[in-house]
Amino acid sequence: MPKETLLESHDNNIKRIYVYDESNPQNRTLVYEIDIQKEIIKMYSTDLFSIKDITIEGFNKLPDCFDEKGYIKAGASYYINKRLSTKDVDKLVISKFKKDDFHDNTLVLSYSSLSKLVDKLKYISSESKRERSLFVDEFFHLIFPDLFEEVTYSSRSRKKKVIENLDEEIIKHFEPDDLIKLEEFYSKLLELRYQNKNTKLKLVQRTKIKVDNITLKYVIEEFEDKLSKGVLESEWGDFLQKHLYLLNSKYTRCIPELNVVLGGDRRVDFGLIDLYSYLDIFEIKKPETRILSEKTDRGNYYWHNETVKALTQAEKYLFNAERKGANLSEDIKREKGLDVYIVKPRAIVMLGHSNQLINDNMKLDFRILRSSLKNVEILTYDELLEQLKNQLLKVYN
Image 1: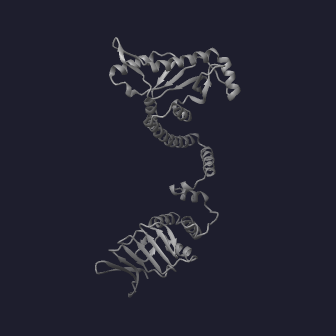
Image 2: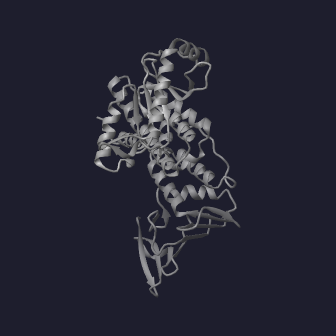
């Protein structure tokens, strides 16, 4: 006969839940006793648990994982009892606030952990009883590794098992070798999963967008942090070298401290090699480098001495690089193993910040002055930062 439940209240603070058969209402069994004020629930489902002392803490009513008829949902009662009955557990406490713990023959299971167990059991409800049992064994081993031994088994549905266990909790357990294996596996997935080129391309694009966005957010945070701290040019050099591909997608390789004057000590911060193996030059100055003079000449702003020096230096680098292009190419080939063409190289000089341009005339004159440069491009720090942020706003079909 189907079972029914009966709720009784006592003194407004104690509530009891009974279960009984329709055919014999007088023969009822107490399954829960709820102390509303203390937020403690005693569970009396002795037929489902070999443990006689079961307490639920932190609730003034029955939590969602528990059924009024006296069991934990999704078959969790059976599997929990099966696992705990092999250990010296005299008391089970399921707590809303306490962490998972085992001491003095008392096992404390957080309600958060129990909820995850119930949810997982619901998800794999179509699996065999053995699969569900093995999952619960693994669940307790992960929480209490010193109490429950590790379980090894081969699933008949390996793919499904992988998907079931994909959540943030496992991330912290990955070792470097695990990550390499995941990368290799995902590369194979992208390569082999679909035969249709359009479908495969969409999968690759979705992955690239997500990875790019994660990388960009990290780079932007680091960029802003360095701007606020006012770090040295050398630190900016290390940062920009590491994230070269964000400067301009046409550059594929970077040669730090390139000596453009053979036999001399003039070294540019970077030599940049583009898609077609042509060399350009990249020079770094500080964000604090003054761009324009604070004074005007006949109403016009002009380059500050600091910027004049940077531009002159860049022009000399370009002159020497092109003048001795053949020898420089040979040196790069010998030392780096790269075939490089040096034909009309250009220089990018990164310096200053647009917040120095405090009025419209300064902004206009800066635009005019920078557009007059032939072989050198000036890039301010905030312009590069804005470029990075704009990449996050890209829309892909």
